[in-house]
Image 1: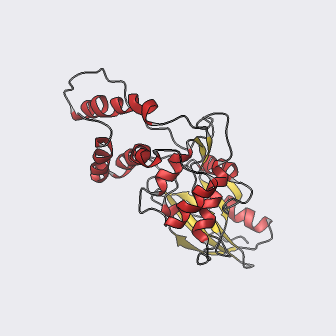
Image 2: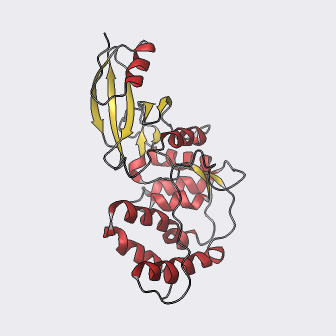
Image 3: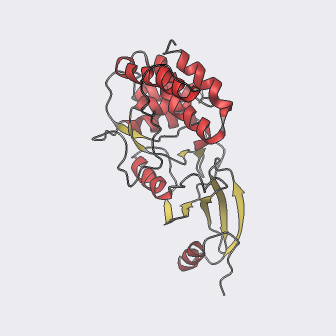
Length: 277
């Protein structure tokens, strides 16, 4: 008789049994951002797995587990950071290997800096990802006509976002498309069973390497050892620091959309660096 833990998909329970891991005995809750419910599954014969299922916001946001699985494959790089292995993929769940989370070993941040630089050394033929694996639609400004607006939304779009968009070719030098993690904030780095660097929850795609680095500085930043080690393998382009706020705008706008106006002061401060209204 197979006993299902409440809310664990039957397909996962069956897969665990078929792999010879026995029953799923119990599940413990892990932190996993705001959009997913993440649990560690403890199997009868001692193995553990990580299960992601839609969280409370699932009705409004596509969990896009197929895109995450594709992103994990895209990020896999020789001598790169450790990544969870996809064990089973469903329309409403993603089952991953459990990396554990040992204390970071000595040299962790330098190793992570080198590992990210190796990921960014892999060039792609174009920016973005094919539509069938893109995790979420990119934010795009609406096509309002230029001029005075009767509402704040039109003013924000026409007088602040679009002028900034027109400046991008002057602000950003030509750079190749490389493999990006796509959501590289402090909460998406971890450590493996031996304390080695590991990456979680990618939104992988082709883009400018500076975008990943800008995201690392958005919510707390990484230690200086990380940036020094990264620069040893991938030296920064001139003026990279001046472009950080520009690269951070899409993530901040996404947070406004998901979590409300609390992020608007940061958006306004970032825009003020580039746009005079």
